[in-house]
Length: 293
Length: 215
Image 1 (tube, rainbow over the protein chains, first blue to last red):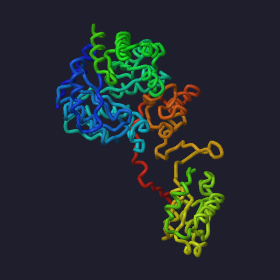
Image 2 (spheres, rainbow over the protein chains, first blue to last red):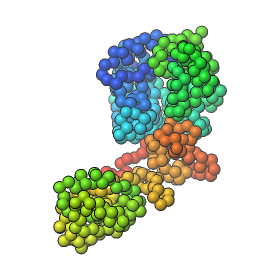
Image 3 (cartoon, each protein chain N blue to C red):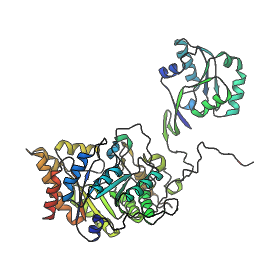
Image 4 (tube, helix red, strand yellow):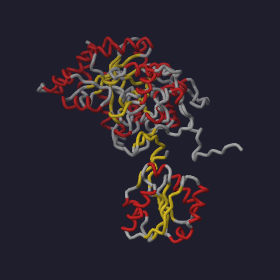
């Protein structure tokens, strides 16, 4: 366990623009493809997020998946949600991550269990995301939530989620301010589509000190865009983008082009970009090179 | 009040498998208001049991089935009918059912599922407003309980699933935090959305809950 900051933290604090992407851990114990995809993406980005039972669908533990990436030399961002663990399990997993060399953590509330594949499960939510961020900060200060001293304090780069296009914006800001006050050092946003909303978000949040990593999703088709609009709160894909995808003979390529364009447009309003490839991994390199050019 | 709902009759009959005779118990309070175990429902149940070939030795609609002493006393007043039955079918909440099971050695069968502590919006419409968490924060949350009204029970504001003031779990339902926010805009109160709310103390209500008033 070292206290050297992660590459992601060093770059963001050194005012360098960063790129992250994400890989969903597998449903099953075979992680070969998961690791292979992460290794393929790693040269293009600064870190790879490992999602936590995303959409409340049961998958391999993000702690195990993050540790596997760490072992492969791929810097992970360990995503941890409050949905499935109480305060003991959350602290345990955070300390476990630290012991395995994981430094970047993205601390989330978690999608509701009713969206997933275990709808009859008991939801936990013993802590909320603000409290979880506070807990991670306490661990870094060498004590647990009950105030007891730790044998070896972890050193995390703590991230939180933000939804710049969700309304009422003022209401989301209250919580963001609390997240930052509790110790969030970077904010990873939901997928954004409106540069004006990013500008407004940047103006409101940047003065609070947290680094902003804006989310970009690669849309594969007009159908996928419509599905997202209908089912994912806080994501608003404009009709112009949907039409562009619909009229394209090669929607995958068009989806990547749209993502490249959006990434370039929002670059002035963030400190990094998080790419959600949605199966179009080849888009990651394209977006990174178009923004970096 | 405790909101309850009758189990499907097939489930009740299956629980009564092997019983030829039953003594029926309802409750005059919550189960009556929920139309799950009042006088009328007890009568209907009697008809359904008879139709299924099960004898009903007698019935009783107890004034507050959660009152343990009263349940014991009322059951004693019908001792013979209770003794004649193979089992007791209780159309009351889980508390009421256990007043009965504590008062008799007979097989006790639950006819209802207990759902939540509910407010009555109007006749036949119930809503959960309070989760009995043992640590009331309504003064700090503009009189709206996020522990209950938020699908995730979040204490520090809305989750990422909130959009246009709606909840991700049900687009028809308002986000509890959007409601709190809106109410504070209209009537500023002494609560402060900016202040951090620490994790709940789940040790405040022991499980099982017990309270003994000082004499």
